[in-house]
Length: 618
Ligand code: ADP
Image (cartoon, rainbow, N blue to C red; front, top):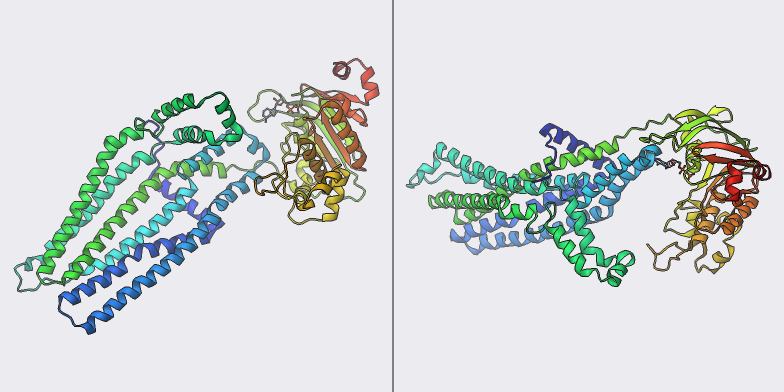
């Protein structure tokens, strides 16, 4: 196929798979246990009726009386009923485990990684592309850790199928034909060995052929086709986003044609795509050959078992047992080979997964604690700080030196792209400076415990997001919280009136993603909630990074001034590209092309010839 994936050695594949297994085992061992038990039960269950039916037929054919037949019939019914009930219970348990834990566990593996990674690595486009690739592989056919999980359960099923089959078919080879029968040659060890070899050969050959056919699918990278498929075929359902456009511009015909062309593309699934053609060509031929070999195999077993029954080795009922068991054996081996093939195809996806999970944390993690000072005496200093984003060749910040004390109101102003947000990201240690250092009370911030240091800041970023969870939990950023305090903070943030009108008060769910009676909050209301969240946290430093960008300049100035009244003794840093919003601040730092070009109070700056004045007049 066109997009050949990397072929890994068997040892590498097994090492990757073992590691994946260990990951699953660590997050949710019960998932593996329930899958194994379910598959084992599922594989063994069909052998029970096979065994008892054979006994029953043997008894009837051998002319046994009712005294022997009835108990056998009882066993047959009781065992199948018991097995059926047990199977249903185990299946129910396994499905419950799978539905409620498999995807959450997958998410947790990546969620934990994403949240524990250095932020600069999360932000790195290279890592984002890697993560997208992992997600797409999962969506395309569960490739990666999910595939490993399902292959594990398949493998367990196959192994038990084989074990059950062996247990039920050993006597086909060991029970001898009667010595006075003309078929006595069937007892000869050479004959048994030849038959055994033929059976094993047929099983392996048919397995290998169907495996070869399946390889077309598993080696085929359908990500692109899958993406196209989801895009073109579900587009009309995306009523909110595109459906309206499609109707108003009558794009249906055009989309249908584009969708058809996509289906015929080499990486898609249509009749003329690569898989489509392989199905009619080599893939189909391998499948047909595999079918022919396995049918011949069945014929061979019938012949062998039939001849031995004729020679008096066992009753006619046993023939069905052997045929059934050996069919199970063949199926088990085919499954096992298929699992091996898919494990191999899954190797590169696991490799991608580990590339991501193994991204090291490079940021220095200090051990000093930021003592919780009751006097909140904190002083921050940027000492000749310069910063370049990973992979960028221009400086986002250059030689920034600045000092500010707790309790101050600092405004950071400048045009878009001048480095304001970058300044905040460095302040909150989402990134470390490329050059220079940032000090807290005279000590490099890298030397503090990261979580301790982060707890000093409450930030409302430009693109802050609230969660589709109850209002109170959004404010407290926690599931359990002090309701009185949450209410107070919302009131301070100007949300009192709206809160009063909400039927469930603090328990009202935001947005309608999860609750039909959730409320849609407007941009302005969302801001108030975000501000209340800042107040609730009660951190000594508060940063507002233009969370008001959607508001008009006057409304923004109003929010900032009002907020200034409620932050009390905390240090507040206001970021804005609108100078009018920050007039009230004690100190204004003017950023331009990553540098602090001016610093001072509004009245002074506006009279000085410089960037501030130019921006003010603009
Ligand atoms: P502001 O907040 O003043 O609008 P930013 O701090 O966001 O400015 O951006 C400063 C400079 O850094 C800009 O040139 C911007 O393009 C660049 N920049 C911002 N974020 C990234 C990033 N994640 N990767 C690379 N460059 C970035």
